[in-house]
Each structure stands twice: as C-alpha cells, then as structure tokens.
Image 1 (cartoon, one colour):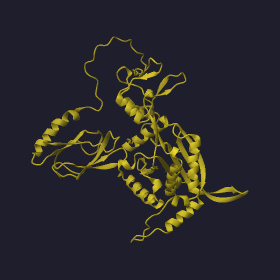
Image 2 (cartoon, rainbow, N blue to C red):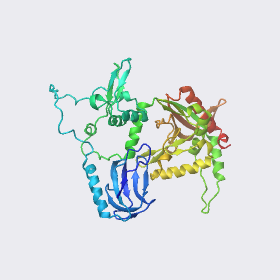
Image 3 (spheres, rainbow, N blue to C red):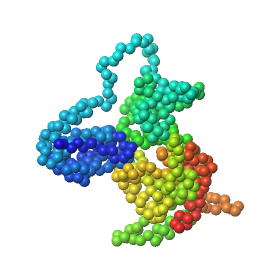
Image 4 (spheres, one colour):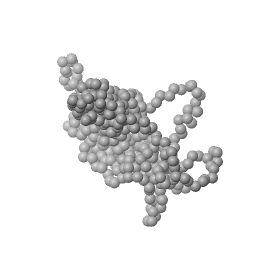
Length: 446
C-alpha cells in the first residue's frame, strides 16, 4: 500500500511552509534517514528526512511551492515490491480534489432566500461584520468566538474582544484572528467608548500615491511577513516603556583584550576564541536576570511565568530580515563559550540552518547596533519576552569626575520593557545591575 508523505510540522507553531527543494526525484530509492526535501519555515530552511523505505513514486507539490499547509499530501512512496506506476496513479486520484480547490473558496451556488434590502448608496462601504460582542446578564461584555479563535488569540497575546468577527452573526473565527495579527480588522477603543477597526491602506491605495513605473514591486518572503506581523503584534499588545543609562567600558575592554591574548591557537594559527563586547553583554544580561529574578519573567493572561534560567536571545541580521537565536542557560556559561556558541549560531542563522528550538522561547533578548556606529536606540520587544536591551556604540566621551573633565569609553544602553510584567522601579534595578556587571567585569568571569 502506498505511503503518503505529508507536509511536516517542523515546529510547534508551524501551520504552513514552503517546499524549497526536492533532493530526491521520482523513481529514486529512499530509505529511513535519507534527506528527501528542504522545507522553508518562517525562520529557517530545514531538512526533511524520510522515515520509511521505498521508491518515490510521485511528487505532488513541486519545489518552490509556497504556503503549503501542514499535513497536506506532498508526495507518495511506493513500498517494497509495490508497483510504482500504480502507486503514482493512486496518488493522483487522492490529490486531485485538493489540487482543484482554490485558495479562497467561493460562496455556495445556492443560498437561502433573504428578505429584500434597500439599495445602499453608491459611495457606501461594503457590508460590515456583525458585532462579535454583546452585554451579558451580569453586565460584562460577552465575546462570541470559536474555541480555535480564542486559542489563537491567547497564544498571540491578543485581546479577543478587539478582533472584528466575520463569521455567522459576527462570530470571531480563526481567519479573523490571523487577519488581526497582520494588523487588519483589529479594534481600538475610541473616544466615545466604541471600538473602531484598525485597517492599513490597501496596496492599490499606496501605489496610487506614486508615479506609475517609478518603482518595482518585490514580493515579501516568509521571513519579512513574519517580522512585520510580530512587530505589529508587539506594538499593539505590549505596553512598552524605556529606560536608558550609560556604562563605562574601559575596564571591560581591558579584560576583553587580556582574555583574547591567552586564547590557544589551532594548527593553522587561528585563536580558539575572539571575545566581543556583545559576548560580555550577553553574560551580564544573564547574570542580571538571575540577580533580579522578578525581571526574568514572561506575561500571560493566566499568570506570570518566572523562569529558572537566563535564556538570552541575540538579534542577528540575515538577508531579508533578522532572527534571534537563543543562548540557553547563559548564566552558567563562560564568556569564551558564549563567544564560540554565538559565532556558530550566527553563521547558521545567515544560511537559515537553525533548528526551531535554537530560536524559539527565551527570557529576554539583546540587539546591538554599536558596530554600525549607532549611539542610542530603542528596540521593539520580541514576544513572548518582557524585555529587550538595545546596545549602542562604545566610544570615547568627555565625562566629569571630581570637578575635572576626563575622557572615558562609554556605551549607552536602552532597556525596552513590558510594563505589564516589569514595572519602572524593577526595570531600573535590573538595568542598574547590568551596568554594575559591565563596569566591573571581574564579576562576569568568577
């Protein structure tokens, strides 16, 4: 009997992916462990290994196909002794209905008769969704939503009551939540207490502002779409506030030079490590989380998650966007080990070879633009984190000490904080602890 090969779920949150490349062709023998395809998720390109033995009878989804739902049939494997042509033919019959189904199903041909309505004015907007909320018997607002829509909204940290429902009688369904994640159909409180939908201008309206032929349209890839969605989600659902201070890093630079000088050399004369200022920042941020444990948290509607370890995400620029690989249990690792691990994570991130567990989760994150000469900036929090530290350039600046002006190497850092999870005083304590570790680097290596 033929074995169906389905689009795999390569991470807990994956709902669809791109079939980047087939590494086996029809008629090829396949055994367990063989890499048969490359699947592109929102953050990485991953290898798909076969789990059964047989012959690849038919490929139903060509390479380069985008947005393939998880569990969709993508190929068929003929088992040992089975006729390959028969297996391929059977696959065509199974796949035909799915292949013919359009992406957006049209309405049924026959609809129940509806009472006549007055004609709408020519300039009237299209039909609006019915309200998805109604007052309950206890005076509280009741939200009409499907269980799946509620779960999706909860996972995204979104208030379900702010989503515009388009289901029967205004009921909020899964597609409404997905639309809201993209910034469409999400309601915001108005001055009069009513909710108004937030809707971005359409592509056609934006393009109409520019002279035809004066621009090229470059379609968004999956990474850019996900980044856009998460930034909108972060700004709409997380109440940011910002704390900024300046660290003196003269002692840190001296310690960095000493650590790099004692790095052993390999056979080619290359040092085993080359510690950066960012590696010190990762370690200092991890230790600050452990010393101020109330800041090592994640907000959820049901309760605060207090983390037992400091898992620090580090923003890495990649073609078309960025990704945040996570240094797990950073508080337990030596700075040299963090340096080696980060170089490996960053290198694999740039070629999209990270595993989901290497970039998902984390306690906090750090974004460093100092190498570009940026003195100071505020980063957007990466859900589900409660904080993110923005690190600027280390540069010599005049400072006043004991009534005299001296030159010191200083670095400005800004902590973006989720005010639901970390209040002002707690954020200040957390950032001050980070500063103390940075200015006294001996505490990072003992």
